[in-house]
Length: 346
Image (cartoon, rainbow, N blue to C red; front, side, top):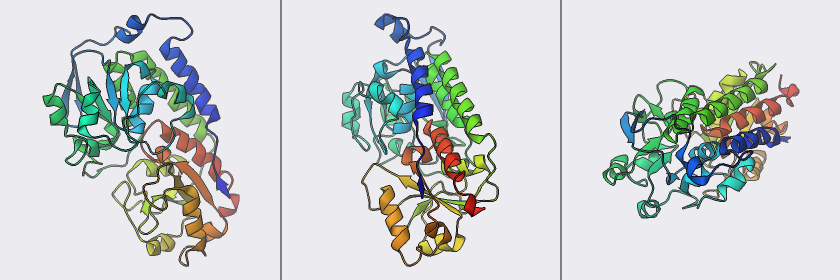
């Protein structure tokens, strides 16, 4: 049995939040809305992943290089101040679809430096530091040389170093950096009350999802992608955070990387009670899709006799729900719902 929970409940709440943040119940002149709440004092200096970033004014032409960053900005009702998005693993969250249609998609993957620059951005945000590393879109210093400030999600930072840009976490990820990101972006755009509302809503949903949940008697493996050398959740990233939240044991928790590559022999040897499968809408490589993963597990000589496979103890999560973002809470809701269906594993 593959568990796929519905996003409807959370989506409806976020939709109401976005509507309230955008002032849809009371018409606001476009110029006034763009000016924000008047609570942020500029220039604003933000300490961001080992850098001092100076924001001279509330951004009006932001580019987001990742789905996670994009969905935060859309949840804050800032689609009218965005001129581009990129790097999508999944469809946009349902409650944000209408707002997302107003923002050009520069690329399904990472855009080139020229494409990003052609939008004339006054802020570039990213969830993952690979975009600001050599071989990515452009290093942060290159954006700064053209007068464009950049912002990198604190979920990707440890001691001033980008994890996705080549660093290693020294401690397991928590939700605190995500809430920090929401508050800082809200302050940057001069909509701090919207940021607090979003954090409060996510925390309420988190607590509701965890009410009465205790999976301390279960072991879990998270398989994100790749059929030959599967990428699984290590012990310090966002998927491991989901396991920690429900009290379950991540069988690869001894791995330091967020998504280390392993072997199927190691996967079978650790024999998880439940397997969480990434269902990615992208088609970058075989095994991105949910059904491809299931077909492999049920047919491969090494995996097909695993108890979790024979009993079909699969839980499907979107790729965005396994990355650090507001969708982490969606993933937590889906995970707790799925675990409740596997009494036979206990």
